[in-house]
Length: 248
Ligand code: CAA
Ligand code: NAP
Image (cartoon, rainbow, N blue to C red; front, side, top):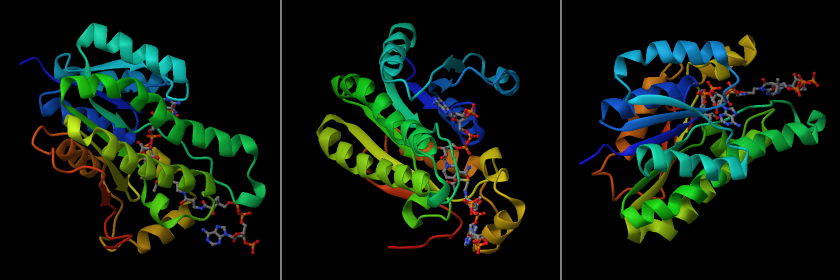
């Protein structure tokens, strides 16, 4: 059987790049889809993944561009085969309290974190149901579950992602396609290193495990949900947060 094709949006980011490596080690042909703008990071990513012998390739993508996503999925299918696994990990923050938030800061975060999930799921879903197999994993956040000071935009988008996950899971369950969310807590990536140090230290002090998460700990969870034998888990949200938010 030829390798299943996995697309990871935000694929050269802190979590995305580790997810690409885990999926490639699990035998997938991985497409790391990300903005083309960051040439330094892209070079570093290519160097980090050179040992994967073509199992991880970079393709430029802006998840906020609806028509661009449809064209991307068509191009990937023609070049590599139909997309069987989609991991939506592209994300941005524009943190500020609501009283200072501009419409642009609101819109940018919603367009990438939430519209981006729609823009990518919409063109892959027919191919997955036709194959009778699909795995969609949406990277939400603990801050979508709890809310965070300075993140009305991001918390709304991340909570919205999980509503989307639950609804789509119901629509495609009979066709062998699962749709799940992973809600990471604070991890050791540039996104979290950008939080002011004093606030970051307060957050770490409230993580029962006593440290930030590592990207590989998120990647391991995504690989698990994307496995061929994970077909009975759907519409779920898997928290991976070091005990920062524990609920039932
Ligand atoms: N909790 C309580 N009060 C706070 C606060 C906080 N976290 N942050 C600021 N305040 C207070 C300030 O002390 C200030 O009080 P006074 O008016 O009495 O002086 C008031 O709120 C307004 O503060 P600012 O004007 O500084 O607020 P701001 O709009 O500039 O934004 C902020 C502050 C930069 C957003 C800051 O709150 C912050 O960094 N919060 C954390 C954001 C965060 O955790 N982001 C996560 C990014 S990583 C990520 O998102 C990944 C993931 O999914 C986990
Ligand atoms: P990151 O290192 O900033 O990676 C995100 C990637 O998405 C970056 O490469 C970014 O490119 C890219 N991206 C931004 N806008 C895009 C667009 N329009 N189209 C395509 N790609 C785009 O962040 P991360 O920490 O790996 O986060 C990955 C995901 O996990 C995000 O959805 C984030 O919200 C979520 N998350 C992270 C944490 C954490 O602790 N790190 C916790 C919970 C949830 P640029 O760098 O060029 O913008």
